[in-house]
Length: 217
Ligand SMILES: [Zn+2]
Image (cartoon, rainbow, N blue to C red):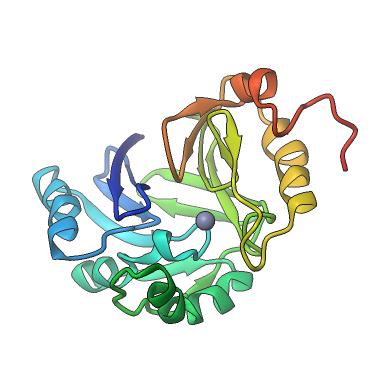
């Protein structure tokens, strides 16, 4: 499996393409604000001869969904997200005004992602972990053979997702990290929604926001 990262919009949000030898791919958290940013992602897809089959949202904060509409339209594909993110998605127009970013209205999810199911593209399966806290319906995508986590805004290199926004819950975030992400092996690589990659081991050792030896909140 290959991973391509693009960083878009004023929030420096990471958009990921995952693809395998079949050339099928999924677009995770498309954050493109406008046609210029669309063309960066779409040119890569065209040049690599990829075939997008799904758009996946880890959660529906505005910076992670700005390119949902253009991605779904360009490739005639559907959106997948957790049901508990629906309210956020429906309020995205208001959020875009608050944050002063242009908004192209996202389609609603075609399928509600749930923990325990698997999402397929090509020959690749992604497992789903439900990781609320930063957002009520946040999920992460795990590819166990490759030991990679597409982590959205749960765990960052040396930091964690913010919990001061509506719908956030700090105790849930800590629990999601300790009881979901930190159960994965130390060599799993986290590809976060902002900033550089890290590993579960590095964060267990160094992340002062969530210590693996805490008994929990
Ligand atoms: Zn977020």
